[in-house]
Image (tube, rainbow, N blue to C red; front, side, top):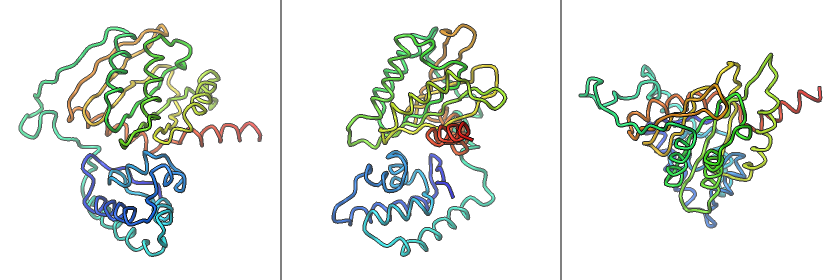
Length: 292
């Protein structure tokens, strides 16, 4: 069973199970780092962080690997995991997912008429310079999408190139912060075949980022002959939305700093992420297909 992605307010059984895992880790004579746990669990450090903080309910496989890394017998935790899993399912029975029904934009008494302040960016440079500045200020989590017909290397301006570097640098910094970067990459396909230029770029991107434990990328197979709506969600409050198309350099957009506004786009991101294939696995499938 895949790890269960949690909402902005995870269910109590999920938080309680995370607290038990944190306590187990604290009791370990040689407290394993998140990097060490990630290696044992076969996942990114961001996933370990999300599990230990209750933002994500782990699969049994991840739970067993984490427990074993902390020096305990996984079988002793099987019943705890099953009980927590049942309680989480019971909590959600008869309720629509919080991801699908965020609160009204201005709160329960606003009747949908809340006013939001947007910062508008007229071109590629303005958008990416503002986004890079906010990435550098990020505290814990960045979620981004890239769904365009061309790879960044074919139309990169200085500002957009700096934006891509800034995200990887932020994820790779040696910091005590519990950092997480997740990127959805849309790869254009025609008749089931990935675009050659985009495939070449994602191969290089995978090589450049695979050593960064706080960075994860997944693939969205993109069949539309147009760019998608791209977004950057920084921490729990800032949304950047980019609109592109036509000439390769053409891009503009806006940002909104509002937690409730964020929930709508975070919900959309999480729904996509839960269904997508990790970039490494996608490339493995493509390479396997070539040898058949």
